[in-house]
Length: 233
Image (cartoon, rainbow, N blue to C red; front, side, top):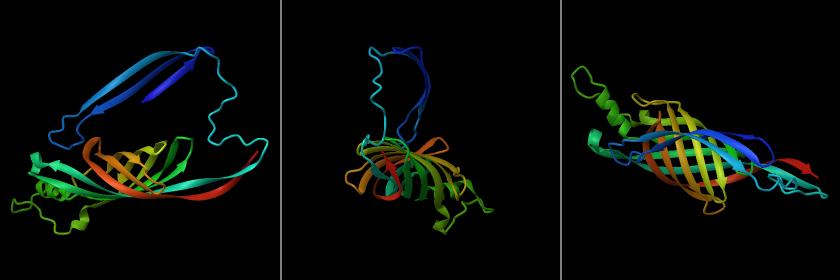
């Protein structure tokens, strides 16, 4: 969603925005007739009281008149998820997808983290689709024995919106190796719950070239590494 806000005075402001909503079953069952809905919004905001100048949205609490030494951190998230890919209506079978991933985050604001991620997935349905799309000179499917060719390594840009123990993670990535007819661009939307300091569980929607591939469920381990020192007064 994109939104702009213009303040006219201390009490009134006008907002306008554009968003795109997508409804589907995440390819849990085919056919998956998704629905895309563009939305435009216009609004007026009224603030009955003036802004409190003594309150600011700071990540660190004020320390005046004392001094404090603060450190920043890098978070590393390692996880494994299993997805269920329903292709029974297409090739007559369903498939289990294996997905290993890592996200590295640096906190930018109180709720936002940005970083990079790595993916390694194995989707056995890609082999079946490849064999059906490529026919040899004998008019029979081209059979590939080496399953390693269908390992998909990828790199992505990552964003994490944190809300207490809950996180919403968006990844926009590129496969470093794929077999036709798989497209190289992919996206992930993940809802992650940190049930302890180091362990988490999540639900992930995998999308390739704007089309839902599967929904995966997984668990993982996270830790942080401190770096840098900054003294505030």
